[in-house]
Every structure is written in C-alpha cells, then in structure tokens.
Image 1: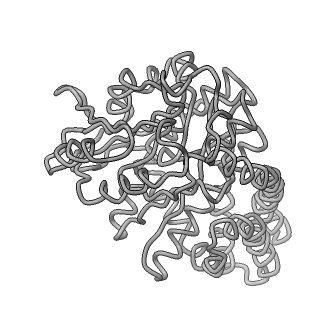
Image 2: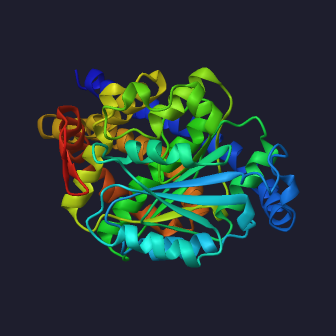
Length: 396
C-alpha cells in the first residue's frame, strides 16, 4: 500500500521537474539572441535609420509609449526622467499618459512636464464613464502616431537602453507582432522581499521560456509591446473588456493564435523594467487575487495545463507531508518528491536569477515552498470567486 501511495506522490513532482527542464531549454534559447541585440542596440542609438523604413522622422515615431496612470504623482517624475534619458533618439518615440480620473496632481504634473521635456509627451484624459487600465489604453490609442505600442506602468523604473532594446529586437525579428519584456521586483533586503522576488522571477522566467517554445502562457503589462495593426486585427480587448485584468495575457494568446510564431520575449538586461514590490502581505494578496481573477477565462490550453500542473505538484508535496503522519515509512518517497520539485525549480530559476542579477534569492526556494501550497490555494480560490480592491476601487 505504501509503495502505491509513494508512487502516486511522485507522479506530479516528476512531471513538474520534467517541465522545468523543458522550460530551461527554452530560456537558454531566448538568451542566445541577447548578445546580438546588444550590438544592435549600440548601432540603433547612433543610427536610427535601421528602424522600420515606412515612417520617416518627419512623419511619425516608431514607438508610442502608452502609460495608464491613476494617482501616480509620486512615481511619475522618476519615470519621466527615465524616459528622457533613453538612448533611442527622441524623434523615434512619443509618450502618452492616460489619466484614469486621478484625484491627486497626476494630470497637472504631466501637463507641466509636457512643456519642459525633450520628448513628445501628451496627457490623455479618460471620459467620465470610462475607468480602468484597458479603458485608459484604448482612450490613448487613437492619439498614438506610431506603428508599435509599448506599454509600461506609471510606477516602473526603466534603464536608458529600454526602448533601444525593443528596437534591436525588431531589427532582428521584423515580422514580430508581440514582444514581452522582463520585469524585476525591487524592495528592501528582507525575507518577505526575497520570497516575493523569487516567485515573481519564476513567473517571468516561465513566461519567457514558454514564448521561446512557442507555447505562450504569461507576460506582464508593465513591460510589453505590440504592433498596432495586429492589435486591431485581433479585435484588441473587445472580447475581454468586461474583465478588469488581462490587458496583457489575453492579447498575447489571441495574437499567437492568429499569427503563430510572431510573439517573442526580450531577453535583454537593458530592457528590464523595475517595479516596487507590494509593501505588505495584504497588498501582495490583493495583487495576486487580481491576477488570479482572469485564470478561469483563459482559452489557452497551455496556460490552463501549466496552472494545473503547478498547483498539483505543490499540493502533492503538502499531501506527502500529511501522509507521513500516518505512514512514517513513506519518508523516502516524500523526500524524493520534494527533491524533484525543488530541483526542478532551481534548475530553471538559476539562469533566470543570474540574468536579473539576483542569484542570491535562490536560497529562498525552501521557505517559499513551505508556504506556497496554502498560498496558491487561497489565492486561486479568491481569484475564482472574483472581486477585489484595486487603486481605491472595488472591482467585480
């Protein structure tokens, strides 16, 4: 009997470890493009003629950076300084900030900055009846002049090579329709921050590896770009406009379905967008419930299967620990299951964390695993139920 139970406890962790090995290969494949893109980046900064010849400097920029903002007066000045420091020529991009009915000085700040900054900056105000990030992006879109829309969040920090890295990838992949960029959590050096950063880096790494394997699952709206014509061709947000979340992943899945092989991950350290980690457990759970609220609306089989396998492997480890109370002789099987799961995580996360310069976070794998099963179940259940608070609004 114990042998049967032991084998049962090993199945999902073994499948999970095999998946992590497959994903590690995908991450490695995406890294092969990085050295080439670094060379392109330097050339693009000095010679903008490399970029999409259909648009001359006198007609339109290449990138329209769209930023939805609500009550971000404290964070926008840093982001605007980062955008002003971009190595890509300012004629090649414009910035549109869509103000989602802020009650602070966000609108006044952007208006004042538009008169002083060295790049094209415009404030877009949402109609009274429209709210939320998707509405903000859709309101800004008609004013955008570029063939490529690049999205980031108002509280992000960007390196000077951020847009040049996107341009370099487009020069290498001119048929691209969607680009997902890397995002790094930042915060104080604490256990809480390590666990949050480690989990988040894992999500980014899995999303990047799945894109390299052409089985896209996830991306992050804080750092992505898509071709405007492609966005319109797949209907934009039309079929999920009623959902507050999902301005990123639903679009990725639709573009991949309509134009397979044209979605890419930007594995370039210059393209990393940095965002502050939630400052409390409550804020973290609220954020994760918001993300989880879209899971039941996925049409992508790859996303559903990945979520089920991850949840199943974590539950199997918890079940093994409980089973030890009844059958102490199961310990070799339970130990093997934990080693498979943690080994698989370490195998994938090691190069991902090296890319982000956060290899030291790897020690947090064990404490994160001890907490992950109840955390994932609670977040998943809350996300399935729906309803959360975000940006001072109750969302259903």
